[in-house]
Length: 246
Image 1: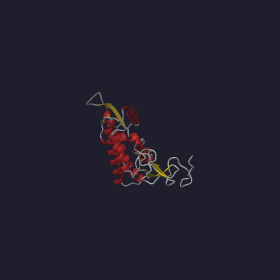
Image 2 (image 1 turned 180 degrees about the vertical axis):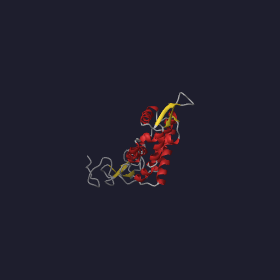
Image 3 (image 1 turned 135 degrees about the vertical axis):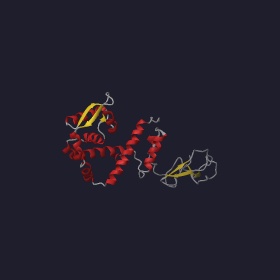
Image 4 (image 1 turned 90 degrees about the vertical axis):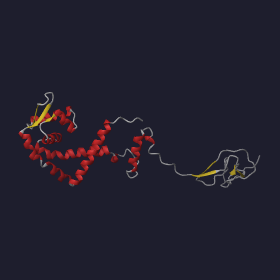
């Protein structure tokens, strides 16, 4: 039996001598030793013989940390349009790749801002005896009265089930009346009462008080309004568009 020989590091290896502690030697097992020295200078087994070259040169790879998980992996099943949209979103969001980060969501910002704005209006509208939804109804009627209930719902983006209680309450307050439309008896029309008309003068103070409390300039608020309107139109168009298949 051939005596065992120690490798360079003092430890026998059945595959080969690893040239550095943090390196990996990748090579397929070849035919028995041919007597020629390997091209990479590696040794075979514990005998100090060169690594066979029949399977090709020995390739040495430095051991590095594995690459991070592809953030787009969950999007592979989405349609091409959706995938491109999400990629563009990550590109223009400062390199942010976490698509579910709460503070990056448009929906959260819009809903949270809406709740906060409505709460801001509450103490301002209380002297008028109006809630914020009722205030919106009155705004539409101050622009045009009489107004069909169907047309009012379309302007406010409210369905009949939501709109009907608002109108009933305003009617009980003596601010509006409901009657059959003279042009179409099948439709209901809303009209302001004298008290409803007079309330407009008091309501003219509302926008100024809101601006004062927000602390933003008129230009900034108009820019926000225009952006919110564009977002509203885009979302409504998307809801009416056919769903993209995966």
